[in-house]
Length: 125
Image 1 (tube, rainbow, N blue to C red):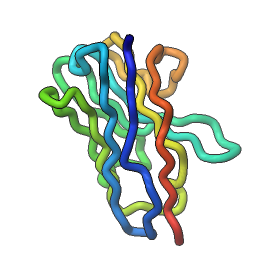
Image 2 (cartoon, rainbow, N blue to C red):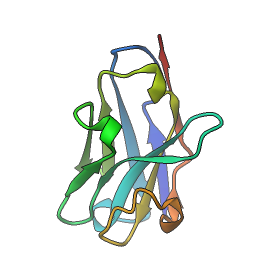
Image 3 (cartoon, helix red, strand yellow):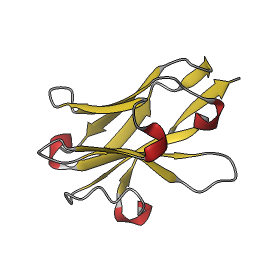
Image 4 (tube, helix red, strand yellow):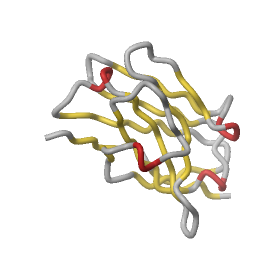
């Protein structure tokens, strides 16, 4: 059974940092393109960052460039999202998702068949 489990969310002040983890079981994560999405109350789910299968190419939404870093630890079968310089606008539930295709497709949540349960990130002003 393919499963993704996020962890690492919490409450931080503006300017703080968090590292989210997305641990996979039932499949090898580097054979999948993995993305982070987030959803704030009353808003649509939006793509945050992506790391492609195999070659590890990365992509970030514009508002996250320079602040967020996505990485993958194949030995731990885990993808991370390091978030720095956090702002109140970053408050959301963060989800990781996986798809077998190479392309990130961050604007197409329906292209991702595997999702974690989400982890809450709250940034206080």
